[in-house]
Image (tube, rainbow, N blue to C red):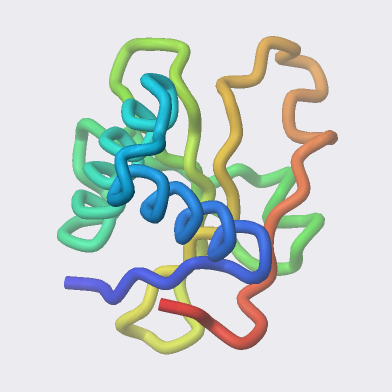
Length: 124
């Protein structure tokens, strides 16, 4: 089992804001769906990052750019839903979520425009 952290500042701010909206009842339909899908993905990643439904795989172009192995997992299987990007660390028992993006439409340079959060001072 892994401990999930949110990258800073973008993923931590995004997740905390989304949770606050859902908990206060002010989230719209799309935000509720993303909260549910991301919450399930975070649970599966924490239990087994290679769970078949996540279809996790390394994105070598992002790994080269960021100097560490960057993994991508599906938020929803067999749909063009979003993708969550993550890395192992900072400790051996940790996984840090560093990005959330829609499914790329442009296959030739799909990952060129993606900017990921930092592991920085980790926020759980």
